Amino acid sequence: DQQVKQNSPSLSVQEGRISILNCDYTNSMFDYFLWYKKYPAEGPTFLISISSIKDKNEDGRFTVFLNKSAKHLSLHIVPSQPGDSAVYFCAASRSQGNLIFGKGTKLSVKP
Amino acid sequence: DAGVIQSPRHEVTEMGQEVTLRCKPISGHNSLFWYRQTMMRGLELLIYFNNNVPIDDSGMPEDRFSAKMPNASFSTLKIQPSEPRDSAVYFCASTFDRVGGYTFGSGTRLTVV
Image 1 (cartoon, each protein chain N blue to C red):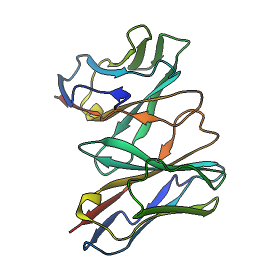
Image 2: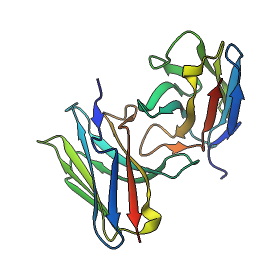
Image 3: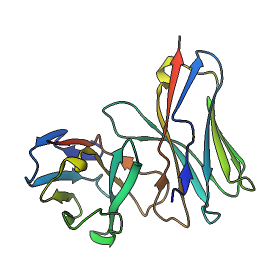
Image 4: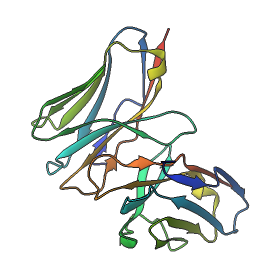
């Protein structure tokens, strides 16, 4: 049973527009959430995180929103750039436990 | 720091052969993880070590898989005998006290024919 779900395998966005990547989780005990970005032939790299005590965390063009009641988080990229084209993984953990990853969403940003 | 180093980058082997994947974590990190990435299952945790001790190997698919961490700077993941369904990208990651994000290596792409 998947505890972290990314229901959209792919997303295509025009350069300059907003990219919104979504993630749902089932375990209400998760208290730490992260987004990773992965380019082909490379390992995932940490992008941004959020603790369950917050509902928003912002870092430059990247903002993560957490809706605990809906068990949903999203990553917003504004404005999107062609270099943002990659696979984005959502991950969650509880009490400094291991990270559980979703299957990823492939983002394509078209010039 | 050179980051998490994995070798080899690519491995092609015949079914039934033994395969050994290697990982050097970031110096000072005390937790090491082995993940497997497939299209069907995404990133799955196989096993993790804390202070060189295996803590949870419940993700190891079968007895054909084994992992060791003889010291703080080296870990291996072995598959014996290998099967075509083991074909995947295997990632090693490390962190300090499992706080914050993990640092991943570039992965080993394994193809078993």
